[in-house]
Length: 270
Image (cartoon, rainbow, N blue to C red):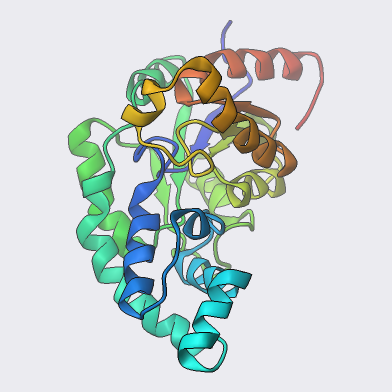
């Protein structure tokens, strides 16, 4: 089937194209909170994933368990000044370590090269700020991934997710004729909200993303039944956010795009 209606993919980065399991931001956040004497579990660190990192830290500090531990240690709730301090600690570590975790997800680059050959433009956006993207993009390019456009979470005055602005900035930069001919692909609820608010089709990625939170080796070592145990709640989270489709990884995207193309030809809209 020719993609004569769909024009572009707008892709998240960690958990979508690179960093199977989305470990780069979560592990660094755990380390930063630990430096303050606050234990944060991997599951807690993953709850606000998809937000800009300052907002992620603030939301993490407001989780009931984390907030209680913070109150017990410091005698008061976390303030914006505390978030600023943690963010200043987080950023140098994230910049230094982002490439360490950001290998391409198995099958992602072959899939995107094939889709680009079918005429689709490749846009991208991230919860990472520009200083982190400036480190990540050359690493990704060396691995074979160079999207047509990239927007970082602090590039736009309006802000980042869950608002539509980063996705729409890709529309402008890529010269897309209709937002309904774009597909937003992400592994987090804020990323799905972003695509929906931008008027796009949305595809959630369960296995490679934040909600499952396993490395590629650990995921592929599971039996099908074990994978289903992890996939079911991750898929439910993305569907609850409003995703039109949920699949394991980008490798399953071509069949999804075929179905979206069919629906567009039938007159359906996101």
